[in-house]
Amino acid sequence: MLSAIEGVLRDLELIEEGVLLRHCISISNGNTISVSSYLDGSRFFQVKVSEIDAFADEYETHLQGWRQFGSVVPKPIGRQIRDGWDVFVAQGVQHKPFIFDPLGREPNSNKIMLALGRYFMTAVEAAEAGDSQKIHKAFLDQLRGHFSNSPLASLVNYWVERGRALGICNLPVIPQHGDFVENNIGGQGDQLIIFDWEDFGKYQIPGLDVCSFCFSVTQDAGTLAQLMTSLEIQSSALGKFVHDACHALGIDLTLFRSLIPLYLLIFLHAKREYSPTVQSRIERCVRQLTSTTQQHCIPSNV
Amino acid sequence: MKLYEFAADRARLLYRIPPVPREGRTLELYHSELPLHSKRDSSARPLTLCRIGPHHSGRNLISENDSQSDAQAECHAPLPFPQSSFDLVIVHRTLDELAASQSGSQRRFEPSTLLSHIQAVLAPGGVVAGCVSNRWALKTLVAKFRPLAAQTHGPRLPGRYSLGSIHRFLATAGLSDAQVFTLLPNGASPSKLIDTDSTISRIAFRHELNIARHRRASLGYFARLAMVELGMNRHLEEAYFFWAFKPC
Picture 1 (cartoon, helix red, strand yellow):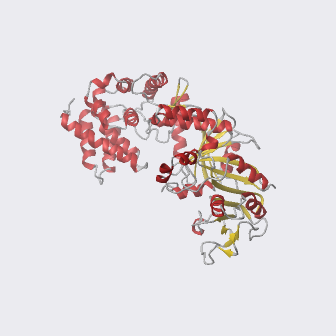
Picture 2 (tube, one colour):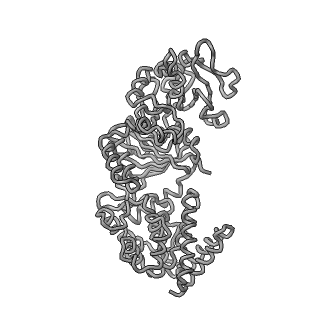
């Protein structure tokens, strides 16, 4: 594997023959291996490797993300298949993982949260022309079809209909990151860095990234239920983030709050290849939120 | 299809990481239980399985009816293959098992002796790769003071080798350009390899610590932070993965 990586780095003219690289290698439970290949303590390449043809689409979507968002995205450098390995090379970026501070006291966390607001404003600039009604309706039909044979079918039908009634199909078409979770966000000083762009643009209903972020930092139906129903949470760090993100994206805050379970179902669709643990956590959350909604009798014309 | 869902698949992947000469003729030396690889999985590289064990008091402890192996060998004697027969030799936890099986016996197991026999059957430029437990693993050291906690984690091969001893026995055996990685969490279920170069190791463990920060109590976090900044992790984790080359 390392011969293939080093060969690709030489072909891309990133290293010379005979250079000694140091590697840190992470093996996922899926099909990919992540390798940080260091030239020295400060310069490295972030390489994804797989023994199957894995990265054709990912390279393209990553490139699109980089073109749109610039320095927020690690620069994709190249991709080759070599010696049976699919090798995708991106710029290595030293960063600190983002850790959400629910109390809003941690200055680094607050800086990243502000940067996220600016990120969403940039996302709006990529809003695509086109018939949003038609595009969103087609996607929601696809979502319904995906879950039609699952135990969630009736829940999905309920929330898709609710979403339509509340006007979700009127939202603009804005490509979403698709895996916008705490683990994929980092900071380099004041600079926001967002990783894992393989799902970029596959989902275009604005609000998905906001919701998946909220889910990842809370993992808890109770907090999400409060986001849906309570006014008090609006003054918390998470509540302010949701307010600012919705404002930047042009989404009515009440609409977003009402449709959190629908966004979670879309996120569940995005995570269909991921571990059962993650999927079941999302499912549990959706069921609890649906139950909460019905208890609070939130009308469909909010 | 998830290639690395199971621990055994991830363990086998380890031996596809180091650069191996193109033919990739592979020998796996195993001691107890089953080898890591099987003939069914070896379509990409020609594979030879050899069960290796001690010769004790005149009795050959290796079963004559071992159907897994193509050959059997004694750990203190040259391997029963011609010189330059292989491009890759795998010793996955084998050195730990041989050391454990020989502990208390009159003839101590010397890894450099076995590795020099391995070196003889490697082609020039060929690689020996393996996985060993760390003698100074923090978990092992803690277990000595908390035996009840150790029992709940089940039996574990005692660590025999330190970072320094790995480099030494590879060099003594005439192998060069050794690379040694901290293997997380352990050899049975590997998920991460971190180069033991002091700078790279510090960077990587700092990152690991930052990821896990919110899951640790303050005292645990600061103790871990001290370990990271002192560069201690590369000496204190549970296992190592290494490879080294026969000079051309």
